Length: 299
View 1 (spheres, rainbow, N blue to C red):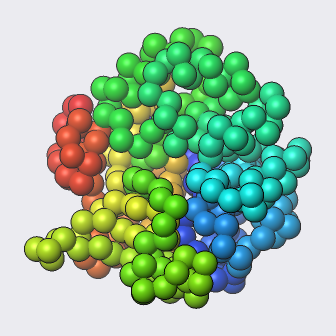
View 2: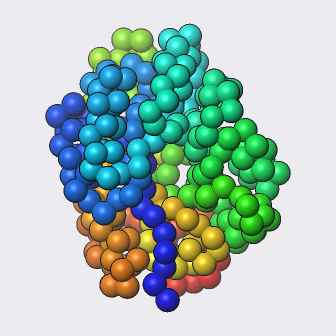
């Protein structure tokens, strides 16, 4: 049976030059992606794209037939961050992906997408968020396939749409401290915007030389690329409505195209990986997230 689902491109987590951002989303506009999330979710100091720029881009993507959602910052730690979040939630042209509970409060009952960092691990939390206006929720990234199924089924027949990340690096943690600035022996408030030099983050190796994590400003990510594209049918069977691809400098559009092949009953495309980058799916199996195991294995 051909799986039925929508494809989403998640918010850009990295700091890219403005021209690269616009060129990327021009390609997304021509892609089979159905939903596009826009906005700065990691660090408010990143200024290549400001709110008017995101809104203009959102309008052009909507004209291209995409459902556009504006994502708020995940870690709000200054009044400036809070002010930016309130400006974003005050506009009514586009839905909001709430990165934290403050954004939900600011929306005052308007519909929203519950972001992946809201700690939605229990059906009661799903129902509570739905009562506040959530029409879709992004499941936490570290859930096993078994836990996903249980959470979706126990959330009831009238639950919000369920969305799962199926391709891209896993955002693992946020900190008030900027790890990229610290790497260059700089202060967070005088970082020189060095993130822009690393379009896929900065690799962090263990003492044994193994790629262990990825540093992306205040965000810590997995070193390997999370890949659940082979589990597409399983995800749809358990009730997942939307499959998310997280933007990387390479392979993003190929991952979207591969998912589109699957929903059109064609063989998936090969998605290229950058040199020295591996894949992982350990969380799906209930194991350490960095592990890659047989995609055909059941969780």
